[in-house]
Every structure is written in structure tokens, then in C-alpha cells.
Length: 234
Image 1 (tube, helix red, strand yellow):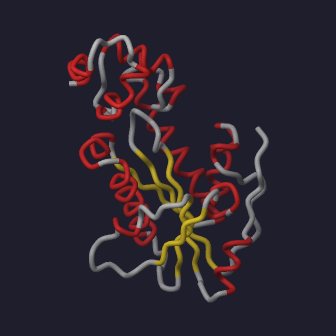
Image 2 (cartoon, rainbow, N blue to C red):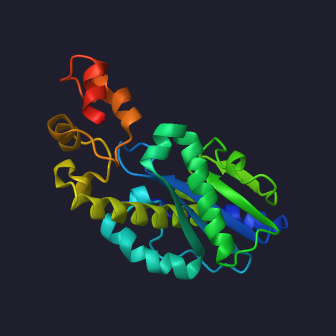
């Protein structure tokens, strides 16, 4: 797979402006119909060295290469991954779930000794779903959003790698308990085999049941009504 090579240009601009730490943040699994949503965080400081060879957005490199990059990335940056369950997505919605997973990732970074004094979060995308999820009374943390930061910014690309590998490993492990959903290959996303299995045997606790309802008119069109899907997923 070809990949755009991320750089430290944005991170170095923050350092030049007085920041001492940049925390790249990216989400994985937002569009899946099963499994948690995961958020990776990768903190680099002003003394950061050059970008690790081969680092790229997780979507732009193979699964094997992502796995090879994890130990490289974790030596280069301080990393953490937070998750929010499928049931939380159903109960609260995807944006609060992203926030919870992101807050958990940042909490893990803090527990590992990363200081947020003089830090800025560089968040992939165009919408800040993270700030509102930080615990009341916590130290304020500046969040900057940037479209395609996972492609262009090394810290965010690193965050995407660790989050993708950890979430994929969880879904592969879950495959053994429910092989009919083909999670080892689709990682919880809506493949044909995945939807066929839902039709055949029903939903699993790892499924985002509200998302199955939303997809029913397209992907589960073998059912006569939404009520049929309700019966399927309970």
C-alpha cells in the first residue's frame, strides 16, 4: 500500500510557539457495527527525534506493517489507548463514546507520567469531541482540530497505529467466541459475511444494536420491518 509520509512540521510549529508537548489523538472503529470505539494518543516533546521510518496513517499501511510499527512508535512517543464499549455507544451515542475513550487515553498518559503543562492536543478531524468529555475540574487542556492530521502529522499517525492494532487484536480475539461473524477479517465492520451471520444467528453482545437498526433498510433488507430487527438483536 502506498502512503503519504507524515512529518513533524505541525508539531514543531507548536514547539516554536512555546508548547513543550504535543499529544496526537485519533479514533479507530467509529464506523464499525460491532466492538468498541478506540482512541489512541501519542505524546511527543520538544526534543522529539525524526519521524520513525515507515510511519503512516493506520489506514494507509498493511496490518502486518502496523504490527511492526507498534514497538517503534512506543519507543518514539509515549502512547496510550482508551476504549468505549458497544453498549456505551448504544446508550450514549458515538460522540460521547469517542469522548469517553479519548478521556481514558489521556488519563492513561497522565498515569504514565506525561505532564500536560504546556501541552496541546492535536486531534484528527474537524470537530472537537474531546474537550467536553474531560472531567469537570481537571486542568484545562487546549485541543486543536486538523483535517487529515492522521495523514500529515506524525504524532497523530502514531496514535492511529497503536489504536488500530489494539482494537483489531480485541476483535480477532473475539472471533474465536463467535467465528460466524468473521471478525478476524472484518474487525467489526459491516461486511457481507458479517450481515449474513446477523441474519442467521442474531446479534452478539459486542454488536452496536442501535447501529443495526439504522443499517437495516440497506444491509438487513431481508427483514420485513424494523420490528423484525428488534427481535433479532435482543
